[in-house]
Length: 138
Image (cartoon, rainbow, N blue to C red; front, side):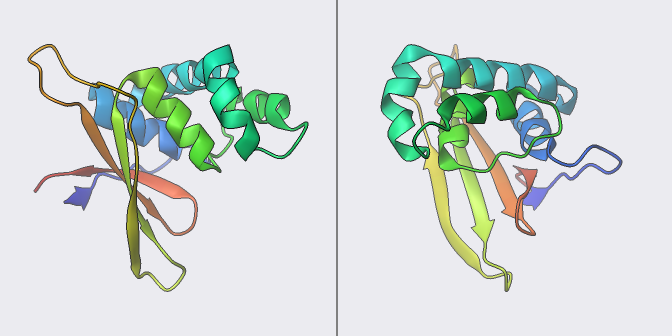
């Protein structure tokens, strides 16, 4: 797979640009992907499962931060919320600081399928620390 990076865009929005491109075919839908993810994080069912993975008393602030354009996705909780919000399985290829590949991280909501009955998967790479790009088959 190769990545489809974008230049000239605000830092912090790369995860949602990559997610919008991979899930909907349009990186320009990043704001919608961010809004849906923040709404999912705020939902009672998601919060009940995820609040234990966020420092005590910081969950509401984490939701508020994520809702703002330009803020980075920093935790697995946010990736899981995005997967549920968009109804896709999110697979993230990661590298350590030396550039060596780490195990893939996958977040999948239950029973994610498209209209034809095929599973919906998006493939992203987390490179140079906190930067995300969409991966596409060659």
